[in-house]
Image (cartoon, rainbow, N blue to C red):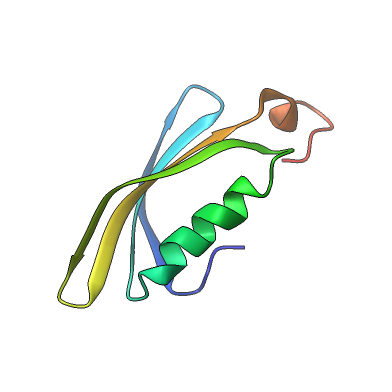
Length: 79
């Protein structure tokens, strides 16, 4: 579950299994906590990477790239 402090901005997809989300938060620690939670979903998530982390005036912006496992997206899969 996404922490309440993380707000998603725009999102784009690359193919069927990759999503790239620009997000922000006032609690920088929630970025790594959320990344760890996504990585723990190993049966669904192949990778979860954070990039472009920038903190300014109490807000942290970042890009989150998540690649889903193909089997999770198939009919009967977890997603």
